[in-house]
Image 1 (tube, rainbow, N blue to C red):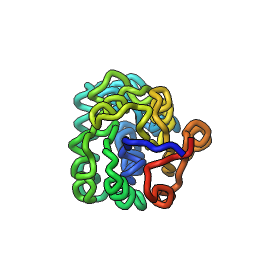
Image 2: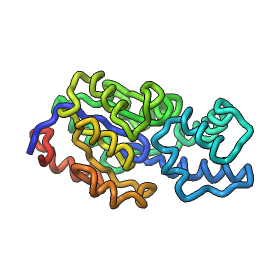
Image 3: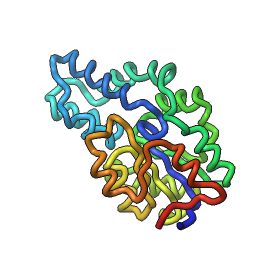
Image 4: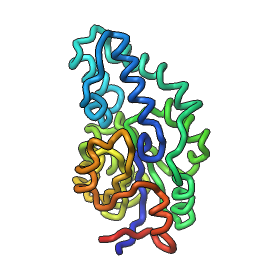
Length: 224
């Protein structure tokens, strides 16, 4: 077992049970335009952040809107769900509380927008656990690369090799691994199609944060 000193969490699909919101949003958004959602669409846009995802969507479907118009429409569709409906995944609050008790600094690294996730974090009572929140709009590259996790680690004052990254998507796991972080894959039903790759490439894998509550009794440790 090796002890770690910083925790960096993805939000959507890892701490927040929110990926279903985006699945429905894609259906409604493209359906309005007479289009069906391709099987690989959610996988393609999830790591990108809003600006890159809007540009990708416009290019892929030859849409006449500007990226700004696409983002505004997405935000309007998602705002109410995040403010009123999105809940935590099981045992998230207990796990964050345990890390806090152990003195572990906590950061978030997300492809989402502060206008969406901040109300959800506050309503679910976990916003105060985070010393730092970084979004992909603040770094050069998306979640297939280590940039966002490196920035989060820097902001909590820890080296990458001393930090654990928790992700539900394979791009996040790969980006964390590239940066020398310890990667923990987190099960989410919307990432089921990538579960074999996440199991293979993450250093540790969980179905539920209850497993980690049982693991971290006195120290923040993971198998080497």
